[in-house]
Amino acid sequence: MRRRTFLTALPASVAFSGAVWHEAVASVSAGESPYGPLGAPDANGMALPAGFTGRVIARSGRSVGGTLWHPAPDGGACFADGTGWIYVSNSEVPLIGGASAIKFRADGSIERAYRILSGTNLNCAGGATPWNTWLSCEEIFRGRVYETDPYGARAAQPRPAMGRFKHEAAACDPDHRVIYLTEDESDGCFYRFTPTTWGDLSSGRLEVLCGDGVPWREVPDPTPGVLARQTRHQVPEARHFDGGEGCHYAAGVCYFTAKGDRKVWAYDTARQTVSAIYDGTGTLDGVDNVTGQKGDLYVAEDGGNMEINIITPDGVVAPIMRLDGQARSEITGPAFSPDGTRLYFSSQRGTSGESAGTGGITYEVTGPFRR
Image 1 (cartoon, rainbow, N blue to C red):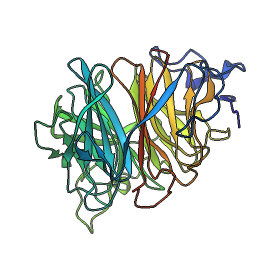
Image 2: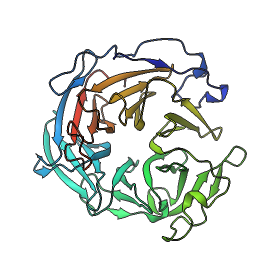
Image 3: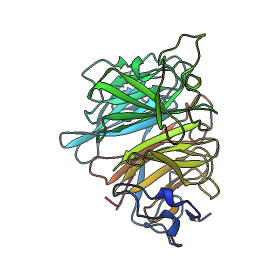
């Protein structure tokens, strides 16, 4: 199916600060994806626009760069490393969880792979920091955020000050020196963590987004005990979102997704308001992990047509990649290489659809991305 959808009928409050979005999303007109329609699936079942190519770089349970690639690959990010780069990926399985990294040479060949976090639980998404660490988030009751080293030199550290709840994703805002956090609950919240010292996540203040007028309130007990009131229920004015998922910050706006209502939300840091830029009524389904580049958002589907969709500043929503024959999986971990020419992501359960994620596949797409 060739699909395109457009943002329509959104209020004037969806005029965002910064260079990411044009002044009025509501004024968009029909148009095509900037990359054109998807072609026929390749040998790996990947449908891409003309000029793009894809390859498999890792499979769960198989050796890559001297390391067995983990099951259920989930959230990911890229980091510069000399003339090459590193892609990190979480493992969303119980008890062993953790995260692994693949180091690439300048020509795109794989130099080695290694573990950067082990012995944690259901590591779902996360986020990269400006100081080149990876925040790996546990999606469990009283889950933690772990700060890890993509380069493998330093041991991972738990960051309980960032809250004990069912974590999903994190997005760093270096302009205001805060980190935004999503929560994967049917009545989950959207949080803001302000470190005592920027670059040191060992202490700080955790707040929750509330209604208009009083945008943020501090969470009284960020690390509640097992029987204590959960963070999302501690502030009566807290605003709730149905299944918080991916999170991405750019130019004054923090974008995040909610799978329950299929919406893509945007928190405008200047106005301190939140509005839906995609209202869930179009063909983009199962909104999940999200990343961005040069004003464009790239949203991965959990299920749906197993696509990654672009949302452009002028309001076009269209697929830029589709995986065929993997209806029982989900797309996870989209992240661009530092030069913006390569997009990495995974199919968490691959063609097998096994709940343990042992059929996970991690991909790379190369092409003329807007950058």
